[in-house]
Image (cartoon, rainbow, N blue to C red; front, side, top):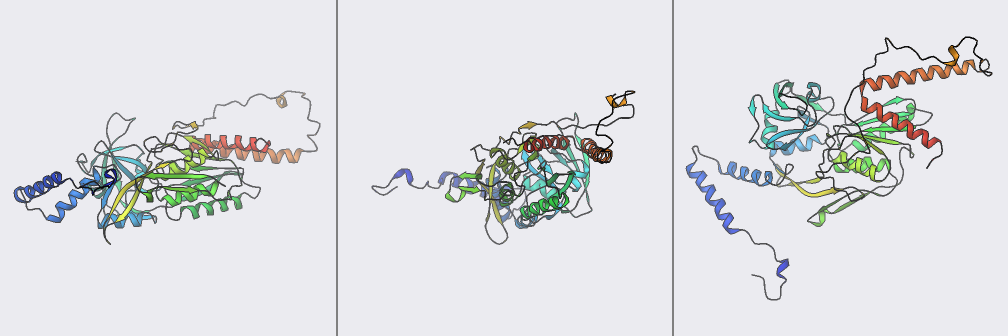
Length: 423
């Protein structure tokens, strides 16, 4: 009962006594009638897991081992197969395999549904129970049975467990003036590693960076502050992301500071269905701010915020407390980031064995020579050599990674547009 004159709409909701009596009744029946004796702590732990598991796929109760693995995982080294997973229709869904891990090398792909682990069905298992089955000592083997969208029959994939050491950021020069930065997941040091990667690309390209491809494909996310820091590195002002939830602490805004590390050089962001959470924050911020062209496939759509709430020194709750929104107010949750340019996953085979070079004016007999040809023969030869090297790079990239090749082509177009003095 609220006191006289109180605002009953603001009165806290009372405990559901009938439901608590039912819980106590079920607890007592299990204790007295289950086929085997059950420890009270085990029953209560299962009840807590059930409460959180019934909320959404990302809320969970973290026991001592899980809490430790979470803290170690964000630092970039942990044991296992190297996959980020979630729940879907009672099965384990692969959000993304992590680069250079046993899972990726074995052929696990984003979107795979794991239906059996070492022949045992995963239907009915909680996410934490399934993860425990997949963990084990480095060097031991495991067989995953997966259902893949494009395959008619389930696939049996054997993987050898290993200690996972994730290099969050990798970079290289694709062609003179055009850089590539790959972020495999967002860790505590990812922002610093991206800044180091940009500095290295600038040193390797003394004539200046004309553009960069930022690859977030199959990046399952990670630390929020790292996503904000990476976005800030390429922005000079404006909102990056904001969150909304029921409590005041869950309503936050993150804004960019001055200084774009690329000095406004064109930026293309590659994403796919395995790009989730923090990756979607970066892609959404750069897209909404008009700072980058986003290419690839629609992202995973994990736009919820999980807060780690320690219960004691050994256990914690991972509780969904808010939703992410892009600067323009778009919700990422269950929507994802739709790319500006859709790119299907494909491959390109280069076969020029039977190709015949097209006929040009220079091939015709008695063609008129270029008036400046003799004076600039050396320069022309050098230019031809440079063009040949660039063509070789382009063909190699196209054969290895069709989507990256298309991103590089768009980046070149943006660079030419910029050099022409267009806004």
